Length: 367
Ligand code: SAH
Ligand code: SF4
Image 1 (cartoon, rainbow, N blue to C red):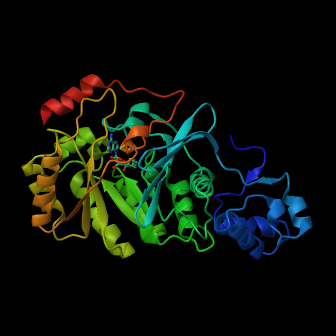
Image 2: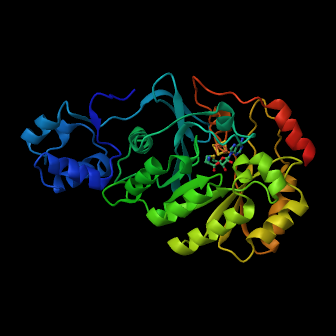
């Protein structure tokens, strides 16, 4: 666990860090020097930060920490995917996953311990919500992965960061947006805004606020084309139905000058995957700046859902493509180490277990 006695400067917004140094009578550029060490060079040991005066380093020693989450376990899949299980205290874990692909490396980070959104197909949702992660814990996942994979911020194996691990990022707005700022800051990880993706189940007011403070890429977990079904699959839909959600998406794209919004759609066998669903999905997105990601369902024990056969996925994709909606099919990755989307369950204490089976059968029978 991180040292909680001292102030962890990791993940602190640039402005706050400058204010911190000013409060010690130091020039704000000290903050920028420190950021360069931490994020560009991935150095966390004050002793190595030779352009900070010895007096300043002595002063900081003991007062501050630059702490990364502790790694409880690390697993590597046969396909190169790496999963870290991180100790976030009180016997709780979150997971971070690195997915290497040709020409890029995507890091899937967690934003919360558990999740309150209660989507019935999701392993994280099954656990209930425990707490928000801090920006230090979110940025710590990135720095830890970069260092573990033998890189630095300047020469990074991580080219893309997606908030698709555990948790609902927009329910942890302040810390997630602070982390996004550091991911895109040129003294941070200097990622292009298109390479940082916040994925949400559809918290409409927060999507509106997001457009005011950042312009990173937005992904929506849509999963259904009718409110009746989406109310069951993504319960936040009862509060913010599809029409309202889509309007917020198009506004976000316009306000942030984004090329497109990504719509994630898990293919659930016999639930949301027939031709009529594809036609309706195309109807919702046609003519808008949208791209669809068809996600194979990763089985979660205790849920009644199954994975749509590949043939039906291909047919679904063809309907969308024929109607001019760009659609890609995601390959399952890291299956053998439970590192695929929605399999991130960590290890929680105090979790609220949601009684599941009956509710689910209800969902499936209905569709
Ligand atoms: N809470 C956010 C981000 C984390 S979930 C969200 O829901 O968007 C990241 C993605 O994994 C979401 O699209 C989610 O719907 C998907 N997912 C969850 N459980 C899954 C499962 N069992 N199989 C495949 N994808 C899953
Ligand atoms: Fe939470 Fe996303 Fe899982 Fe839904 S799919 S329970 S929003 S993590």
